[in-house]
Image (cartoon, rainbow over all chains, first blue to last red; front, side, top):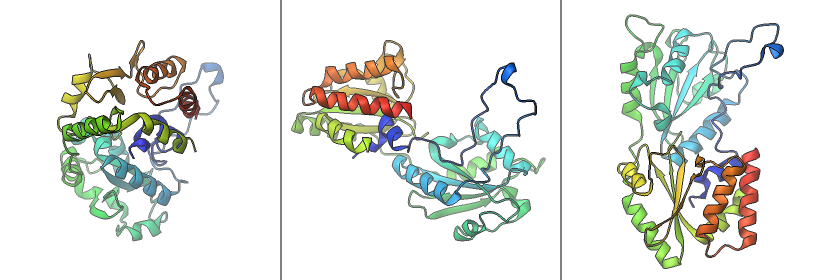
Length: 207
Length: 105
C-alpha cells in the first residue's frame, strides 16, 4: 500500500515529477559557441499553455499522498505582485517551508480571460488589481480558504506580498502534521515478525 | 506497468513504512537512530523484525535515496542482496531492471 511512495516507483509512474505548472527550473547555461544570437525570453511563472485543470488534479493527488494541501496561485506573468510571490517562496520570507506544506499550482488567468471556467468553479472572484489570488484545497480538492494578493500586500510596496501576512495565511490553512511515527514503526516491526518480513523504512518529505 | 510489477515483489520481502521526516513529530529522532550522520532525503533503511539494521541507502559515494546511476543501482542491489530471504534471483533482476528503467525516464 505504501509502494506508490517509493521514489523509484513514483519515477516509473511519472508521479514524482513536479506539477506541470510549477515554475520552470533556471535555464541550463550554454557555452558561448551555442549561445543563441537573441536573448532568451524571460522566465515565465505561469505556464500559459498548460492544462490547469489537470495540473490541479495532479497536485491534489500528490497532496493526498503526502497528507498536505494544495495552494492554487491564480496569476499572470505580467503582474509584479505575482512575481514577488514566486521569488519569496524560494526564500524563507513567509516563515513556512511552502513545499513541505503545499503542492503549489500556478494557474495563468491573464487579464481574466484565461481559465475563467476554473476561477468560477473554485469560487474565485477575478480582479486584476487583486492578483495573485490564492485558493487552498484539501487533499480531496475541497476549497478551504481564499485570499487575494492585494489583501496580503506590503503596505509600503503594494507590488510585493507582505511576508508576515502571507505566511500567516499559509500557516493558518496548512494541514496538521502527520502523527508521530513511532507507533507506526512498532506496528510495522510487529507485522514483520508475524509475516517473516523486514521493514523498508523510507524517510522522505512532501517536496 | 513497472510499479504493478515491482509492488508485489517488494511486498514479498518488506513491510514498507514511509515517514515524513520534515513534518512528523519525532521522525528525526527515529532517523538518527539508524543513521551514523545526517543524510539528505529521501533516505531509506532495511531493518529486520527485531529492529536491527540490515542495510541503508548510504553507499560508498553517499546517500542513494533515489538511485540514478550505475554505482547507485549497484548499492541498491547490494542492499537487496543483504536483506533478501524471500526474493529469488529472478525477482531481484526484475526489481533492478525496473529501477534502472525508471532512472532513465
